[in-house]
Image (tube, rainbow, N blue to C red; front, side, top):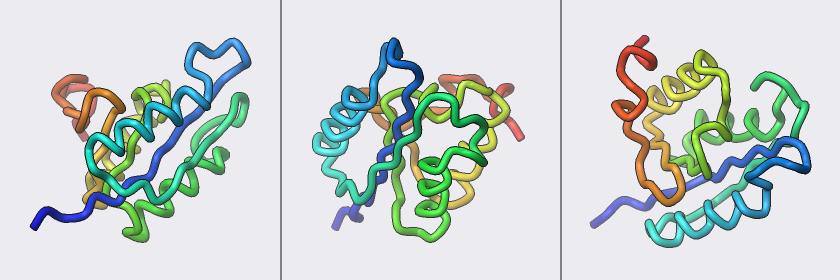
Length: 123
């Protein structure tokens, strides 16, 4: 029997001119979760100007869901929605891995750290 994939979506939008607005990200995440037969249990979102991850309430909620084990997959529309700062992104990816949570990029499938390069993500 295949284990149930309990997913949480995360999206972040910048200014109104952001090429990836929240509704589009949500659609991508929902579509990906459906195609991958995931049960999307939560959707978290942040908006422009909220700052580093410790001030992003949506991301804080996502991290709590990861830590308490209520999800085993995180789905994002693209990697830069998690963070544009490589050090912060590396910390988040390490946190997901340590908690046994897979990261999926909508339309691409499971995130492969080799696609970013081991030297960048090595800890």
